[in-house]
Structures are given as structure tokens and as C-alpha cells.
Length: 104
Image (tube, rainbow, N blue to C red; front, side, top):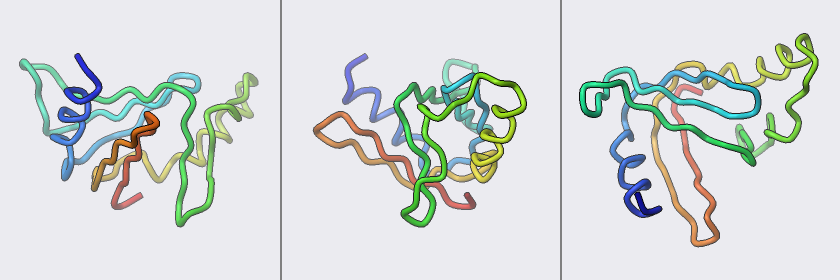
């Protein structure tokens, strides 16, 4: 799948509720009401990534700690994304993907 085709799929999720999970320093957004070929749909965000809120950095993938307790505390900074609506998506020529969420 090309970058353009991938972005078209991502845009099809706009307006959908998603749930965030975290696997080490990778983010997974599962779309509750969206099915693809009878299976749940999701977006994996691999590092590097940054979560910004009100224009300020809340968490970055490179800050992901290896210690379990520190990881839990770091992960809590991403709690606003636990369930949110994907409001917008932008693809920049430098390969940057910007996702905007409501309710986050």
C-alpha cells in the first residue's frame, strides 16, 4: 500500500471513536465502530512520535522508559487518548503525519 493509499484509509477514520493502547513505545488506535474485511480497524503509530496538547509536548516516544513503574507513569500522560474522536489528519511532504483528536 502506498503512502497515499494509507493516508486515504486513515482519513476514512475521521469522526470515529478510537481507543488508545500502548505497546512499549508504539501507539495503537483501535476504531470501535469501523470494520475492514470483517475485522476491527486500527492505526499503529511507530516511533518517532510526539503527543501535544494545547501546543505543548506531553510525551514523546523516545522518552519511553524501560522500568515498569516509570513506564506506567509515563503512559498515564497519554490517558487523554484512551478514548477520543479522530477529528482530523494531515500528511506533510516530509513524511510527518499529524492526527488531531477531540475529547482528548
